[in-house]
Amino acid sequence: MHQLMFNGSDIVEGPDGSDIVFQWVPTDLIVTQGGDDNDFKVRCLSYINSLHPEQHKDMYKSIEDIFADLPDVISLPQKSKVSLQGKTLQVIVKFADIILTPGNPWYRGGEWHIEGTPAENIVETGIYYFDCENITVPRLELRAEIEEPFYQQNDDSGVAGTFGLLHGDRLIQEFGFVQAMTSRCVVFPNSLQHRVEPRKSLAFFLIDFNKSIPSTSVIPPQQQTWRECGFELTIEKHRLVDVEPNIRAMLPRGTPLIQAKQQRLDLMKQRSAEGSDDEEGHEHSRWYTRFFCVCEY
Image 1 (cartoon, helix red, strand yellow):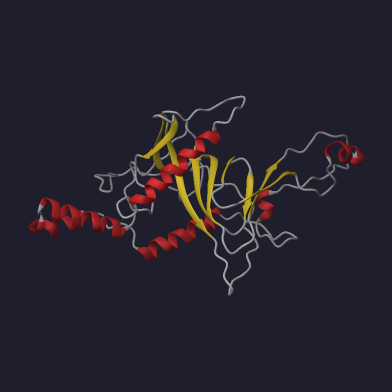
Image 2 (image 1 turned 180 degrees about the vertical axis):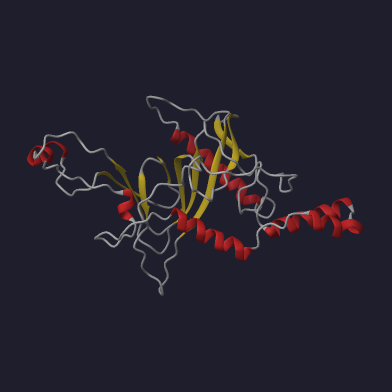
């Protein structure tokens, strides 16, 4: 059972000195390992934002099972191995669906981006592709920003030969792409910029362990319909029909759907990088690209 009725909630504030207004709300999960197969097990400790835990109980189980497969990928051998065993994680869960139809058969692809803002502290992204039908196999493209190298003034040929950089080149390193086939899981650090093509996917944005943020454990559901449903069940369970009007008057109303849609547009506007179209017609690409300029003086 996930708590949907709260006595109060946390005040969510943006990072110091930031004008960030919105924060995605993560879910708290616990990761364990054991059983006969010694596999990872995951359990949601709080509700998933915008996904009702009673109405979508089976989906919660599927989400937990899918995320349980990700730690094997996240914990691949590396210089500083991080184990998720026994940890309580904060994860933002997102469903994405881009549909192509005969009337709308073309999608140019998403913009280059990383996930979230400093308000979320996202360190890793895990994506599960659950449907890619009626299209050629889509791709997930990856790249990273690089530092401008040290070089002697006017050493155009030396820079080109050593670093492969010409005047005006982007300061990025391309990592190619991953084919987003159905049932494939992809995990990558949020330091990598990525761009998507049409697909249906389930994404997990992992919050930095050391920088927890307010989650659905302390933030009550924002949906007005959820609160109404929970209120009706409480009244019926405790037989409080006689005092229902008084109790209803004291409860916060939640966010109406029209207001929620406007807030979503405001969030998207704030998180859209400001910039110009590049030569490929991809708006805002310059926000995530610095250009190399050979110093001549």
